[in-house]
Length: 209
Ligand code: PRP
Figure 1 (cartoon, rainbow, N blue to C red):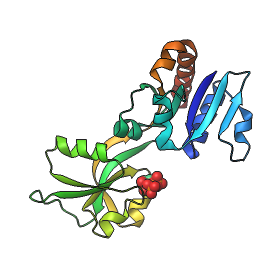
Figure 2 (spheres, rainbow, N blue to C red):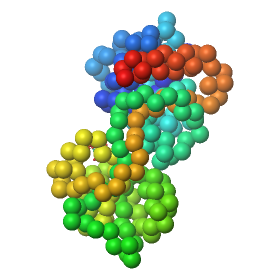
Figure 3 (cartoon, rainbow, N blue to C red):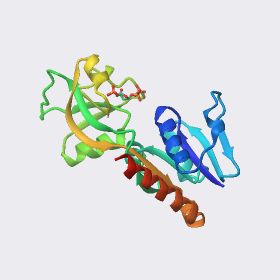
């Protein structure tokens, strides 16, 4: 049995569809209820709906053999897992954003609001820029508007949230997309199944290109 942690939400539904098209279907998952675990014994697969930012924890600790999470989570938490495949969906970018009239004064410490503390620290360290991190858990865009911070480091997908709050991208940090990850021990003991799933998904990705 392969245990798969799927990110709950729209991305997870797309990911499940890809798995199903590769022969790992589990129709009960599409029933609209609040169950979190679904199994297809015949196909040897069990799915868990997991909060997207928790997928790598389930996989790293072996509660799931494989899972799908955004590259942002891998960069932020650096979990000890194998990254097997770029699924080429859930595409967005990590960016620095701020008010339209904001200009960076290098002589002052830059106040950066973000959920992604590690990504922000690494980015500014490489630029030798002195920063003060303000860790938030959501609605990051509020911070520069209320002068809680000078800029934010956050995910930009369509750009709508920034636009509707009169903010703009100042710098691009990195492109993000969904990745297939594997627990290291599972990869050793279930190599064939995991490699097979990765290969089939890889085929799907190139077909969708
Ligand atoms: C993410 C991100 C931005 C928004 C970007 O927020 O933090 O706020 O999506 O998407 P857009 O460019 O398409 O507008 P999320 O929905 O995860 O909520 P939260 O960070 O406020 O919890």
